[in-house]
Image 1 (cartoon, one colour):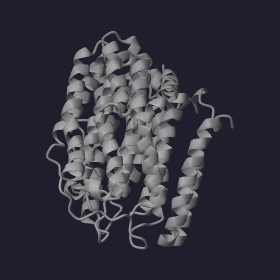
Image 2: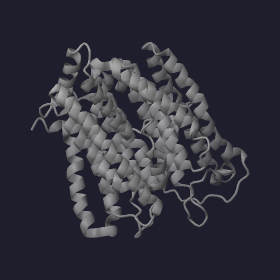
Image 3: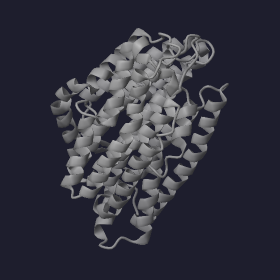
Length: 478
């Protein structure tokens, strides 16, 4: 029974999701409200359970999972982000027409998968968690069955996701064939024994990282991201851009440090190229976008690139900078998408074009100010809190001797700032059109306010406590 204590959050979500699935089966759309708030409660309880669950027990279940501070930190980001995505959907979908009780259940199962992803220390466990998250995500992307864009997004995500899973499994098979084990510890030992890595092991490493790169929307495996983000329902897009992104990046950190640590010279080259390509493409490709969801899709690609610079730096400092970056990124992204969810016309039509924000500062000053804060913070402009995690990853890169990488990353920050500032310019300097309707529920307004305060200059008060948490979490995998 001692082995089950560290996975108490996953047990709470798994049992709760199964019970709510039965409730959804018997109540249909009438049970949407019940399952929504029950799922939010389960996610909050699971987050609180992380406080009491042992987090330094090391490997459990024969080395399939790790009970460490790194996994606990990842879950502490994933569960609240999933709860926000459920709350946001409750007021966005049309009642009795689109919003079904199964929406919250799918996010719960996806959260269980993500929790396994960040704690897995075995290739098979990692794949089970990854597929549980992915299968739920495919359904969520095509959740609006009557909407052609949503159906197209779900189909694209499924086809490309299946391809990525095949690539990932091929990498697993190569690593297992050449190392004789699926345990991260065993794989690390095999890489450490060979002075010159065999071609098979290198190919396994490449295919493994390629599969993970797809899940994290890293260039050149980013092709699905803009289309899926645009076509999926906006609450689902907010979910995709936050919790699964954290799970994928943290999974990459654990795999690279825990399983592929001795081969750092091999995977560092891959991470450097992928990081810089993601930063530059995410910055340049967003220039011509007129749909705010597509623009934020490229923003997510851009931000993952910055996080990967910290991973490429290696060491506890680099891993800590990645964790810090993803913590701040989640708050900025969720805040931005909560603002996008409020973009409704006077006839309650959903708006996604940048032009619909014109003159927003005159008609909805508080809304415009909140969105401006999130845009400035995503751009990394001081004194907003989004500047600090970028400084941390660049500092980690310089400390690791990757000075050229840090310089290119800083230039990418300058290039990418354009489209964030473009949104602010539209809101504050363009002549206004039809004013947006006031549709936000009180809970959504509170969430936006909390997120805006967290990424404002007041967020610098969190540097000490959050830095201590990320240092402790990163140290647990070394």
